[in-house]
Each structure stands twice: as structure tokens, then as C-alpha cells.
Image (cartoon, rainbow, N blue to C red; front, side, top):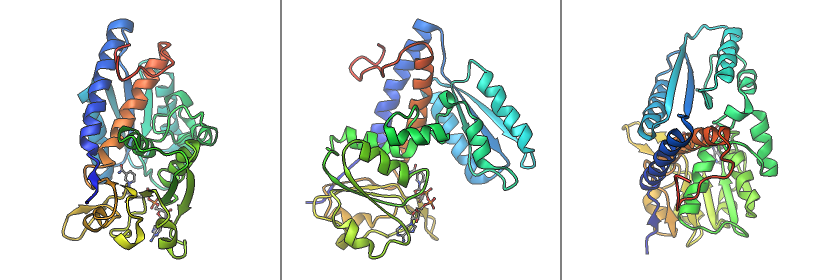
Length: 296
Ligand code: NAD
């Protein structure tokens, strides 16, 4: 039987409806509207598109957003000054610096300048380090989105063999740490891994984030595995595909995410989540309100 397809759009929509209710509750009870500031340096068309999507998503759930557009030749000192201004602004609960930054700017210096309690992308070293101990304030959005999808589909992680293909700082590595924190047995593969298939075939849960179309074909996948495809690749004919041979692997897996419509919609949703949590924590709501009573 072909795998059940995980509908990331539907899960994202359901979560956003809950977040909208929580934003309204926050406004009513505490007079606070969550605010996200997005810093965009230069005019990279891909970055423009990502930023537009994030701002539109904020509007959907009632989060206030501020787009700070800065010229490509801005000095690092002025950019850091903007971060300082937003750090000090009480109506800003989350700060995001859209990457990549121009080469004359040291990305790490900028990310480290963001106040840790506003670092909704989870890229500050404090939040990165917190992944080791399970005490991060803001989990990074893409792996967090994958975790939420697994939770939503009630996929048990503890004791499972998880193979993560891709070892980047923003997806593969944090993904592996988050799953280790949940007691999975985790293996990370990357572009120098010899004989990728001998690892992937062991996976009960296979998470692929390499950026290589058709990297994972059916013979590399264990029958009944859960397959999460994070990859986003544009083919020469304009089609968007993931890293997994979807039609082939679907015949072997038990659960699979499509591209588009799988992990993608969850990434921005987790940005909304992190911004909302930041505002909730600021007014003293320390525990995440439960699904049953989103307005609690
Ligand atoms: P990256 O280029 O920073 O890292 C890619 C990783 O994959 C590296 O660790 C590399 O060693 C590994 N890799 C490359 N070729 C490989 C191969 N042949 N075999 C095994 N491993 C290989 O990329 P990234 O930022 O981690 O993104 C990965 C993919 O996920 C891209 O397609 C990107 O567009 C996509 N992405 C999607 C979302 C989303 O919201 N769905 C978010 C971020 C990234």
C-alpha cells in the first residue's frame, strides 16, 4: 500500500488558527500584540520572496510585522545599530535577519548581536548551544517544523533509528540534536558519506535535507519507513521538487511528505510560533497554552 501523505499545508493552517486565537487572547488580556521585525539587506530576489511570505503569514495570525530594508552597501556598524534599536524596542518580540548577508558583513557578528530572547530564528549561539541540553529558547524553524509534523502524525521517535541526510547548521545538525533529545538513535550523513544507502536503509525515520533532486530512491528506503523531505529544488523545467523520488519511495514508505506542501509551510509557521511564544513569555505565560484551550 502506498504511503500516507503528510499534508503540511493542512497542519500549518490548523496551527495558525490556534496561534490567531492566542494572539487575540494576548491582546484582550494583556494589551500586547506580538511583533516581528525582519531585517532585509540588499535586493536579492529570493530573499525578497521569503520575506514577503513571512510578512504575509504574520498578518494572517495578527502578528505585527516591521520590515527594515537596508541597502546592500550598508556598513556592519550601522546594521548592528539597527539590531540594537530593535533589541531595545519593547513592542518587538522577535528579530529576524534574512540571510544571506552581503560578503563585507560578518554574519556571525550580526546573529550574535540579536538579544537571545528575541532570536526567533534560533541562530544565536546561545540557542544553538541550548540544542545540546534541550534548553533552547527558540528551536530553529525548519527542524522544529519537522518535529511538529512528526508529533502531529503521532510518530514515536524514542528508540527509533533516525537517519538525517544533510549536516548544515540550519537544518541537518539541529534536526539531529532535536531528535537525539527525544531519545532517537541518530545518524547524520553528508556529501562525503560513503555509500549513503547503507545508512538510509536502516532508518525508521529518514529526514532528507541535502538540496539534491532524486537523491533518495526506493532501494535506499526501508519498507514502512517515515520519510520527511526537507529539500526544495527548482528543476530546469521550472518544477519544484524535493530530494526524494516521491512517486517511487511512496510505494515503500508508510508516511511521506510531499514537496511542495510538506515541510515548507511548517517553517514559516514555526517562525510565527516562536514570535508568539516570545510575546507570551514576556507577559509571564511560561508554559505553552495547550491545544485544548488555546486562549488559556
Ligand atoms: P546546505 O547546502 O547548507 O547543506 C546541504 C547538506 O547536504 C550538507 O551537509 C551536504 O554535505 C549535504 N549533501 C549535499 N549533497 C549530498 C549528497 N549527495 N549526499 C548526502 N549529503 C549531501 O543546505 P540547507 O540549507 O541545509 O538546505 C538543504 C535543502 O533543504 C535545500 O534544498 C534547501 O532549499 C532546503 N530547505 C528547505 C527548507 C524548508 O522550509 N522546507 C528550509 C531550509 C532549507
